[in-house]
Length: 466
Image (tube, rainbow, N blue to C red; front, top):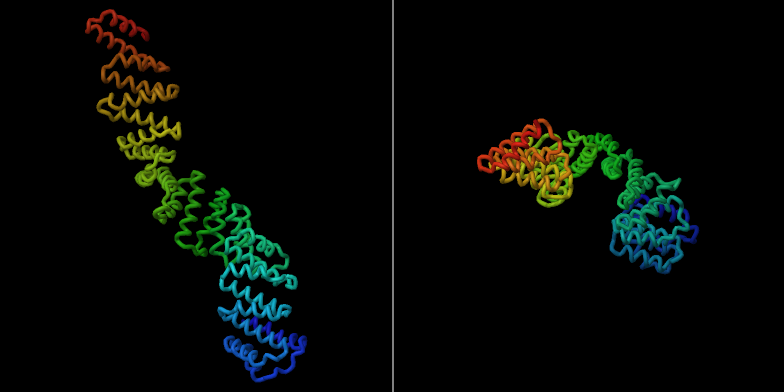
């Protein structure tokens, strides 16, 4: 309001009257009454009296009529009257070359800007001529037009104006920093995280942005994979001076926790990830996040909590589910729940996304099947033979054949036990001793069955490792 008053007082009292030869108004009391209300910021009354004066003084000098109409139009703009736009258009039509026409357009564009009518504001600023604008006004025009385009998400148009304001040597401080903020945000949206990061870091000391900029900086440090810097920045963004919503605090906790997770500092990551996980609800607890949380709990030896998280992951059949089954099995082993571990290892072995995990899961399943089964031929033999068939060159084959040997010996199936012994590559003293014993027992078995020639061959085999 003060700007309008100062402007019009200067224009009316100093420049306009001498310039356009305005003498005393034809009805001084009406004019003075309107001017009194104008000078005392009584806009509604001023508009009414200027309109009334114009109706009864249409023969007054054109410059005086123009001043009255401009002031009435300015009142309508400031009062946000619905006819403000029509008044501006009418003024420009009547006085197309009048200096106050440009001022009326400027005032109306600012009126739309203050209303946050971004589309019309952008159009209004576009319609302004900048030829006679002073540098400071032109920078204000560029900022406001750029901001309006920003709010309309027309970022390419916005960034040109905003960049011009940022780089101008004589840019007004009140526009330079907001321009940098919006420009940095556009860079963030447009996939230029390093440009955005540098912009927001330059705004870190701006008191007006102290609760916003740290959030951007944390996000961008994570996006640019500057994990060490993000971890170092955590005390800043979580300080009491930064006011954040719980949801924002949870989001940043997730980023810091993820940075520590990627650095394999799981114990340090745990409290940050827990904050984010507990805040997440519904779709916020994604399978990715649940796996990450579960694996962090697993590394921290919080096995029951880990299992709760892994249970949300194994509902699908993909690489993440395979890993979740595998680590869930390890949790069950740590809790001495071998039967559940065996089941989880089996499920992991049935998914082929990670061959190393699949192989280890199958071996672990076979081993547990051997340990737990009452009838070795139910699960153990099938599992071990499957392992040997699928991984014939595995470094664990000797160990697998050793399991088979123990199964066959315990069931007195000496023929199959010998076949398993033949497959063991490294003949340790224990293997050689087992070979002698099994060969002898098979020979005795055949001798008792009156198969003397066959039994003789096995008795000879018992001498292989004297």
